[in-house]
Length: 193
Image (cartoon, rainbow, N blue to C red; front, side, top):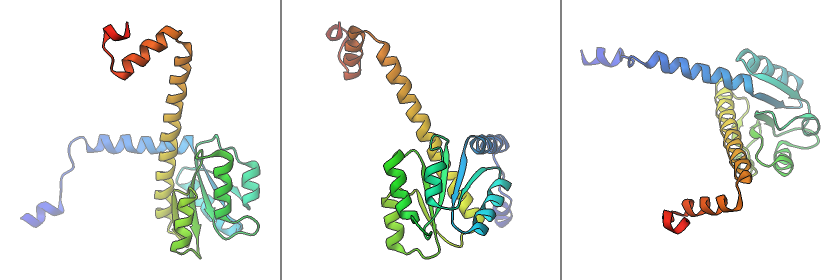
């Protein structure tokens, strides 16, 4: 009987509602974001385009790092799936260039068929959010993409909140700013007044 109970665990009554909210959140995330695939091999690009579009993502493909850097709009949320071994600028150098140009405005997932521990560590130090060996299974890449896009959207939301707070701060008079600083410092009403 104990085995039977373990085999057939009951979901809590609200589990379907939670699953539905999670699915809706993923669908919203997919509508908002674009996945950029940067790989010099056309067959690899087309395969990932097909798989990712079938999973509901918007995909933009680039045959080279140079084309990506020239044509992509970093203001669109999402992530970059970037091959390491490419003619011209390789994936690690591209990661460094992205960081120089747009800072952390783009999340990056590095793929490599020839990667080793040192390369993975360097990619992460350079700002990649993940490093996956090729060939990578579709479900593993999609999970990494979902994690990267979620982090990107959360970062953008936080930045928007900070920008909104700065805009509001700029509307305050000098006295209101002085009072706000006192309140934030934990000063008593008598001290602030």
